[in-house]
Length: 587
Image 1 (spheres, one colour):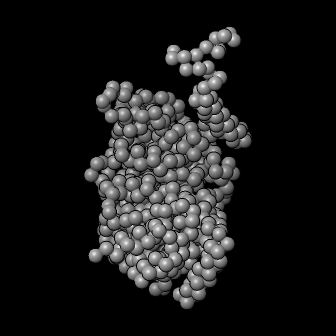
Image 2 (cartoon, rainbow, N blue to C red):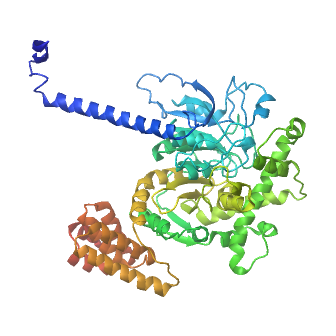
Image 3 (cartoon, rainbow, N blue to C red):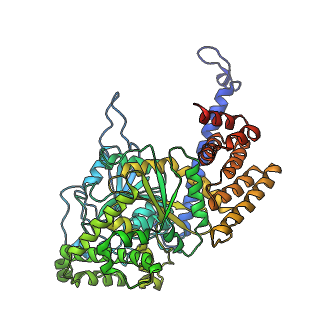
């Protein structure tokens, strides 16, 4: 054995013990095994901590495996989703199985599916393996993710919080790393709300661009197929499979539009959130300066049919009234179409339902309204208004919801106030049919998810932008979370505060505290984003850290604001900024 271990290779190149490359490879392999083992150990510990929770975090109602077709041999391209696993909500039909729609009585009274949902088939054809169906709120109603019959999937963010609904199981399966991605239907926030509660990315596509054939309808004018992921790359890859090729590619000029009134309706300060996104935008090429808007007031002024549903309000309250009216119209449309789809079944079977679900179902089957056309007119007007606002290159930024996850079994889930907070913002995309991405902002002081909305049909444009900006936004969130911001009341205060922050940045710069200097300059920019000096100063700090792209982007921005800073840059900032200045000075 000893002589065998000392023998050389085919070329007599030395022993294993003396070959450093072998040891390096072996060390990497051992490290990889240890990392995977540690990840598995931590996940098992998390699951054990969920008292009484099954190993799948209570997220699945059906387990099976639908494997993809074999990968064709080279030179054929590798399947886009090769090696990935996914789950589907309980309203997706799978050949040979009965879809439960979140309710045992539904499952008992319906037959085995003869075909598999189109979306599931498309994903499998591109290499993904479907490993089961997940729990959902009964009949596609509800926002908490609690199910009277199947139980409540355990939210990996905190076992004491609800996971959000209606697609609770799909969200939990992804958040608990049981699958790579999951699909569900988003009618009135059914994918976006659980994504926000469970700290996930999700995508709600434009209405009608992905076939819902093979899913059980809740409200066919609102239903879309959405998906969850932990990784923006996977979110994007799923979109490449499900979205038509002609749906909105990348544009050269892009602009974020902040819905300031929506941020102001949150219970927490929006300064850090806005600051993070603005800084991310300013470090990117191809983006115009961010725009700010009162989206509620804009909707009130540009969706005339909505005024019928707005509560009496003062001029200052018109915007808030319009946002509430949007959610009201959305819920009325859902009730009308659910009644048309399922009234006969509800009245015949009289299914056993959870208390909050029963209330919503009764509201639907007892729905009576004469002027249904006005609901559809508002939908069309809202879509046109957002198209006019965003054009082909704008992205509306707003919080996903105006409320936060409740404790499990909380009585507040039955209150109208909780429902209002959940629906106030999700209704903008749901009723208009626009596409929306939700991303978590977990490093802020409070649990906040942001949503990005693009015009109907701009799906791939939106997904590509999130893919490009996600990591930078998260980096800026880390910086923003460290800043202590004071409330400001008017422009004069903004100017004074920004100058004070600039001086603090200068002081930190002199002490060679580059990151602290960037934080102060960034906050100054968030208060006064037209001062070229702030960008120059921050660029110098970025250079000290070797962050050249951010430095050049800040210099570009400074030069656009004030070409006089060219001389300042030549005298005070190193070589990279001088090169940037010369680029702008070319005849």
